[in-house]
Image (tube, rainbow, N blue to C red; front, side, top):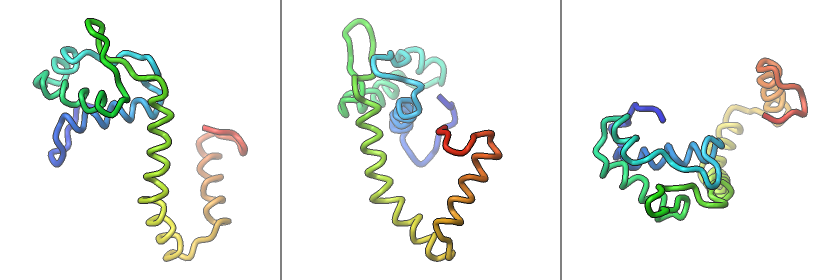
Length: 131
């Protein structure tokens, strides 16, 4: 986790968001243990209650489960549920803005595909390969 905090958002919320990012990116998988509240608090010099509040939000969202005496663990299917929600959010909120920008700039599908293919070739990814 990155120790830099955004002043505009409560730290507990940023912790929650960072764990969600770790799940989405596959850093944390189903059944994996989250770093302990004490370790996170000590490492980032935070109040343990702040860390616990961020973790509790994940429990409330059923992305993490508490196992008494053992810690907190990513629930089965958490990544799948998060991906579904993120895709829906993207399609409803971000995609309309992207398409408006594409139209405003007069871009077409061919221009966009050329750009994607150029990015892939410069990063060493061959056509048809997935990242």
